[in-house]
Length: 456
Ligand code: PFF
Image (cartoon, rainbow, N blue to C red; front, top):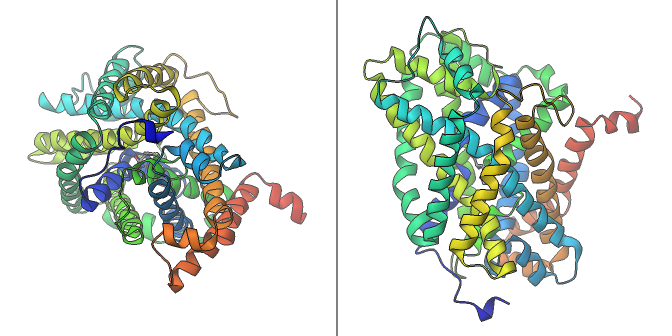
């Protein structure tokens, strides 16, 4: 096993590890996905359930993933194989590798759009011809057969490039610089957006929940999956990153810190996007184009708008890259061990395959927009649905049960740096009972099974 290979790569410092985990968590999910899913799910009620999922389910499972990775010092499949040989827990590992392929395939499409907008701002922003709106521009660009592919490819090449270079010099260094910059910019833009005239509507949209929406299963389902997606949870990205950590660090603080900052990012991004949504009369449920339509409107109205646009899409792309890197790393770490490939070979082969898998998702905004797969969903939405709504929560469910029941209690507490503490007992019971039941209930509720069972 791993002892025959070169020593496993390690983070240079605990801060480096935390920033890398944060870099994985903070990405398109916080800005692009959060805003459009919140917009489609009615705002406040969604935000409330989302935060509930982060605290009650997310943080304990983040810690569980860190603990598994650091203890096993292996990739997502190898972790379960070495900690529980011959047991079925390893299913979570394979689901995780599959999720990495699926998520990065459509993530690359959206990240490619972001890269395109960034380059557009070098020439003053998206060029609107003949009375086009930003919505029209977005529609015309994304429905083009060829153009988005170029940007998707460029994004994948950058992501592969960083994974190619390795853990410390590639992933760790870039996050240290870019994360704080992005945070500052989102705060500044939120401050400006709140002056646009849509502020009070936006604030009530986001913070005064329509309580009746809590009765809608879809809101719970999308909030749960957004929590998993945003925290990079349920597919072993955090197991893989935890495996590059040495034994000395303390994990609970890192788990809580990463989760709080990740949610903070999403809320501030909401305060940046929704005032503009209302000020410019854009429908909050405009779907995946929301960010790409609202933000150019903001920049267009801002005196240094082109500069802000340039900076914003640069940082959004950078955040997408640091998340994309963690997605790719899950698969790369697995194939390096499984197939005995070098890091470089694995990154190139898997990156190419994922780019190809992403093509139909890109086409589904144009020529293939009529093709529907799972239910009434487009190819793009089906990929997202399969990974974010099914694989991630199921993966998280298995991971929680594994640490709760598959490990001896003392081992689990030691692995999570919570021995001898009351919080440790709470953590174990959340993983054993509360989190799995909560995930199960959301599943039953949203598939209508619960109604069938209770006869309502
Ligand atoms: N958390 C990332 C985001 O919010 O953009 C997306 C992501 C990265 C999901 C890594 C899953 C993952 F393993």
